[in-house]
Image (tube, rainbow, N blue to C red; front, side, top):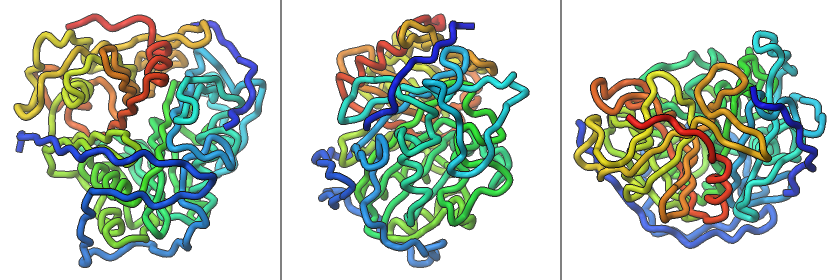
Length: 446
């Protein structure tokens, strides 16, 4: 086990054919303090399906357009959080103690010998270089995850929550070919909103204090399943109305697991086209079309459908022009090895371009401490799904999917046969930080 370390840090101040659809980028969003202005977009909205009733369209108008927060009162356009595993940075930073503001009780996690980690590093569009956070991530309004989730959970917003590992609460887990995806999307009556992508099983399990989760906790460190033992990641992004439509469309395409009939998972309302899309998700998609759109922030959103049976991170490379990538995910059987980019996988689709090299990170480093990146069940393991360009571009990819499946043979194996989303941030400073974080050992090539 790597040396444990508790850095003393202050809380953050802040059919098989597949087509690629590309929508041109929008102008970047200027962030105003807790006030969001509607962005102009050239993207046409989807006509509302008036035959589909809205679900739980009862939320009142929010005082402010939803936006990611570094801490209470400190809005940003996006943030990225990397939560460390218990084998590298145990417990919370600075001796902070866990609490359960969104429901549940602090868990002892006895089967894991009490081991957990809620220490983290974070970056945002305000400061794209990764820095250490303080306290227990997700437990207060002083960290990005807790502050942003509180904005949704304690507010009066419309939302969709999805997770393929709810551990039975509020719905039974779904197996393939459902989407391997987790997160929450929230929006106001005008359709402006935010998305919070997470890699944590069983969290969140409810989007509102008005419909609290039953049978389990709803705060990191307070959930029955120890989803704070391994490394995890979180990515939040501010969205305008057209972005919300695009994210819902991507969620539908990737077969995310949710249930629009349950108010803890879906509180529907706002613009009619958003309502129709929100009411239609939670089913296995029949799509074989990977989509690629540029959101108003210039962040790219990729959506892999479960019926596009290809290795997921090779697909990402191909959609980024064959960019070579280094990837850290839950790397476990059936493992997809590192690939050099010299050949196209046998499990491929003719509409996709040739992928570049995909190097599997099995370890990284932070503040001089080695971090395990394999899909181990113990405290050295990793459950984040992150990638970074190793070529000429400055791409950081925050994904839903692990590098598990097959390059040849059973092309529907594991993640090949699942759906998921990938957000691509083009930022040199964040890229340099991610390259440093992922610097370490690699899995052998095939």
